[in-house]
Length: 220
Image (tube, rainbow, N blue to C red; front, side):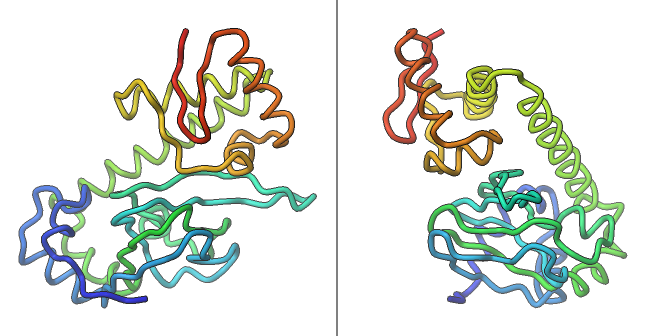
């Protein structure tokens, strides 16, 4: 479903921090931007599809998944409001998305034509917009590093606790609310769901963790 673009909300996006309204308007127009709504588990784009658009999360959450040789899914990233899906494709000019993108919950997404976006960006690359995009690219690299660090943990318990500590530091809240079900959390951590459930029960029993559905609290 497509809706009218909420311009006041668009102006608050991290990519447009410090950018003149006239520049934002011209970029929105040049990229033929549209606001689309996706329901839970609805596909935004499939793996290996051609890169024709860049996606900015306005509300809700999207997950980027990759599938291994055995068909098992591994979640590469959860994208929340303000995140740009396809940023590397803008700056690196890649032709296909290596992974798939699905809405974790009901989400609003700003969808922009990538060719129009790039044409407009040529004259803006060294202004505030360009600086914001490169800063966000650095954030993406940090997320990738975190993902590799999680996967390098030897035990499932270490993966769980490492991920939750990062999420706690990111949100600044004692309770961590994840927009993921157990299977999705298992995919994110690169483990089987049954092994994850068993590990969560052990962490709760040992007094390290309290959890209720998708709400977690670190106790140690």
